[in-house]
Image 1: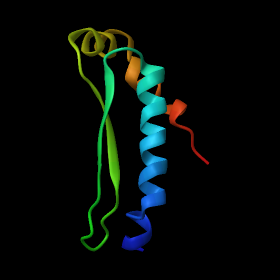
Image 2 (image 1 turned 60 degrees about the horizontal axis):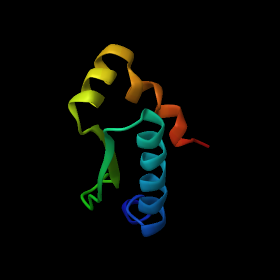
Image 3 (image 1 turned 180 degrees about the vertical axis):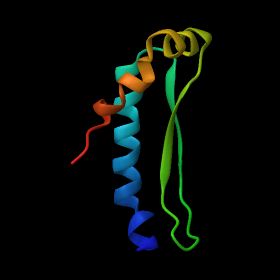
Length: 75
């Protein structure tokens, strides 16, 4: 299963979802490069982070990043 969770298709899908979340959250929210973990139980991951003071304040005051999570899609 580690191979599947770290496969190129999964990484591409995770990155696309993260980019949708970052876009929905607004300016100053960006994605970090995907990482894979081949240890037992490991899996690929991506992150959406606030990358500006404006985005940090928007997240703190209006939960913009948290509110954008559903924009990533989920099946």
